[in-house]
Picture 1 (cartoon, one colour):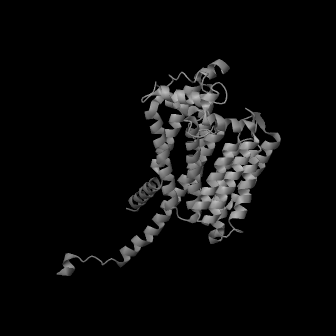
Picture 2: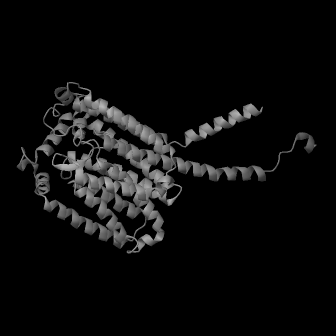
Picture 3: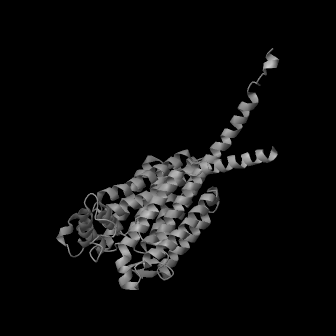
Length: 402
């Protein structure tokens, strides 16, 4: 009897553990990973064969990064997310050191100095996660004081200025922009004063305009965005080729692997403009499916934030969700010619280990927050059930009634 009770208890505990996993979010991530691997192979098999004599070269490397990313996701999902609140300062210190190392000894590609270890690691991608963790911990520690300018806006501006400044030294304006906007949104979610938020937008806009005007190639991107046909073979080339790839896909697409524009027409087909190849091969339907997956990811992420057990979990989940969704929207907006060109990868879809690991880390942290919420809910419900059992009126047997 005792063995049967113990087995029943273990079964019940296992069932509760399964219930604590957000399977909708897991399925969304799985779908994005599978779609990403398909697009990496489709966009690189010709280039890989010509360059390395192996058409699966990029796919194999991406599979290795995917395996590492899944391990990271599982590990972070099982670790209590409050651990990162205690380690936030060290994480930020490590991030600053890595970003500083890129400025000093980083590898240069395509006119930008963003990589370490012979172009294998991009610290600015890792900074997207660590800055969200640090800001969530910092904002939580301030509480209501964040509405005061000396406790809120000024320290916040100095912190974001330090991180984005190091990223700007790498000539990576798009990543600095994403970090700044994500941080500002977290500041907003934490209940900062409206005047502070407006001041932040005005100041940030002025800094953005200054950074654009200081580099001629950024100014050219603005002009090519406004009128790409003015220089179809130069600054407007990438915009026009991306739009032509999307248009040629039609509603249902040409089929996986059947893209023609990826053969020397669309630049960076496996990284920044992979969405153009996806649109050509899977059509409007494929683009809408991808957009729907990111919408569902945003819904689950903000739902986790709203249901989080504490303020740190709420702000952290909001920041992680904003970081991924903003990056995805920016990438798709660039390819569709909605905003000026910005070199950012499409999360889970673009080729690249640093970007994939960063995205997987965000998902692992979100799953950890979700599990913590469900455990806290279960812990609150258990005493209630025990109280109901204790206060319930005991049953009376038929013999006692007679």
